[in-house]
Amino acid sequence: MRLLLVEDEKDLAQAICITLRNRNYIVDWAEDGKIAWDYLETINNYVVAIIDWMLPNLSGLELCKIMRQHNYHLPVIILTARSSIADRVIGLDAGADDYLNKPFGMEELLARVRALQRRSPVFQSTNLQVGSLLLNYDKFTMQNINELNKNSIVLTAKEFQLLEYFMQHPGQILSQDQIRLRLWDLSDDCVSNVVAAQVRLLRRKLVECNYPDAIQTIRGLGYRLNI
Figure 1 (spheres, rainbow, N blue to C red):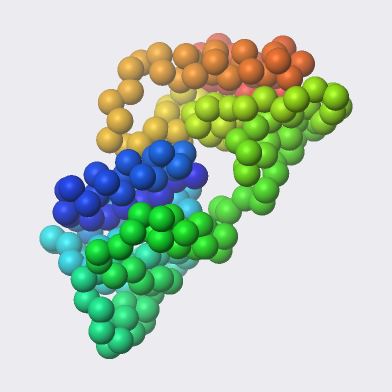
Figure 2: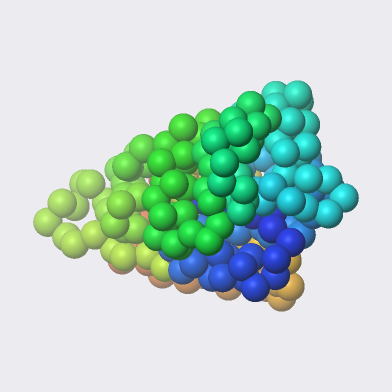
């Protein structure tokens, strides 16, 4: 799942990014509100935004207000050192869904993200199924339900994210650019063959689940899941 982090304190932002990425989230980090707004107009699959109140160029509150004015229903956590009840009211009235005072523990931030992502328009249930292929969000595994006597296959974070994307668009051709934009942070400097390499690794896992031809290569266009 993809998160938007808007924070101008670099040390804090890097710590948050590491924590979230270690939990298999994709994180796009913007250092000011205007950059964050550009991200929001480019990416449509964020599940939660974590936004600092005090930002250069466009404050977190102003960004939140603009999002709501443009009917962005993305859940928002406001980060701030302001702790008074009046400040909380201002933040919530601006359109924030939650409010976290600095300094805070990373486990609390993770818990609040999990709580808000359950409200997200793109939130998924525990399992995603296409045909007999079952993807489990809790265990990061896949399984062929026609072969229940076999163990489920554990996936890496990128394998899981790639298979999820294919399963959300069964039978649809997905280009390398679409996959790269969906699976990698905007700040990542991806090598040209990163998508092909990741597809190759996922195919090996699918063979273990008795799906030898699940991902088809459509020459010149991209890839397609065929279960």
